[in-house]
Image (spheres, rainbow, N blue to C red):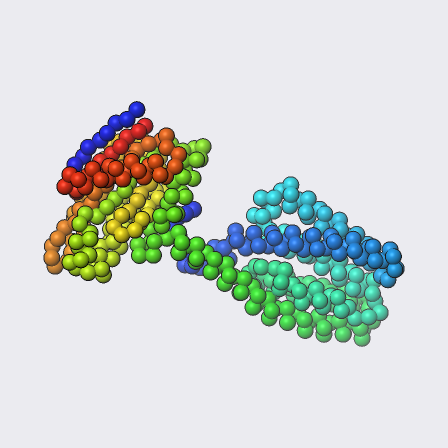
Amino acid sequence: MNDSINDSTIYKNKSFIKNKNIYRLYKNEINKRNYKMLLYVSVSLLLLGFLFLLVNWIFHVFNDGTKYIYIFWISFSCLCLACCILLNQWFVNHATAILYIFLSGIMMSMIISGTYFYRENASAIMIGCIASMPILIFDELWRFYLFDFFICILFIIFSFITKSFSISIIDCVNTLTFCFISCMIGMYTIRLKLYDVKSKYQMMEQLQTDQLTGLMSRNAIIKEIESYYKSENRTSGALFIIDIDHFKKINDTFGHLQGDHILIEFAQIIRENFRESDYMARLGGDEFLVFAKDIDNIETIKEIAERLNQKVRKEITLMENHIYLSVSTGIVLSKRFTNFEELYVLADKMLYEVKEKNKNGYKIYNNN
């Protein structure tokens, strides 16, 4: 049945776990988390800088040179926060690298404070800074180790330059000990953070993907269709509601395992019949939904529908029983609609009319 009536919608199914470089795979999420950490550290150092300057002004408890360290904290934090506001998206996209740069500046100020301004004693605050590093950074382990080790070596060099040999040895032993502890803690915390990100994306994938067929879920395709129609660059699109004929009878006769096998095989035919850029979903049971973007030619729609019917009849059989399947399809071709419900109601109406007339066919509603 090939009737036509004329009348004047990333989330793609992706395997998040198969990518070999897992840090590249989750790069955006890692950058977002490091961006938040950058904000937290900047605000914290800004407040601490003002607090320490106030305390020093009242009680005069710090070394005279230390106040310049706190002024640097305040200035550096204000600059970072201003850039976060003015260059927000750029900072988010490069947050990991910027966090390294920011922490390098802060750690350098701590190295100067713990060596040039306090030469008589071993630096305890530097040990605390090294120990806190795993909490601050979320990145590949080798880069974290390299950064941690570089800071420690730099501090040891400054210590030997500015302090006596005996105090420098104490600094060296303490620093290397806490560098090792920091690396061990970092190995655990970074892997824990990574596991949390993986779990989040796995859950998202499960929510956005039909577990049996690997196609999109109902909620995912609705979101994509509505997003497409709200975009400025949208053109005409076609919505297909596809139903396997007599599927309930097949399930009852041959069992649900055979029914699941048919659904999986049919989902593969849908993938082969439509473009990779089209949205393909299983709504439930034997009902499938496809939204083909950027299509305004009704002849193209007919070719797609006829090719789908031919592939199903040719490729899906019930093994030894030689029972060939067929599908019924309701189609809406339109540019004017702005939400999923309008499209779905009309496509479902077309599907109903096909099923009323012996099934095994398609019907198109053209509203362009």
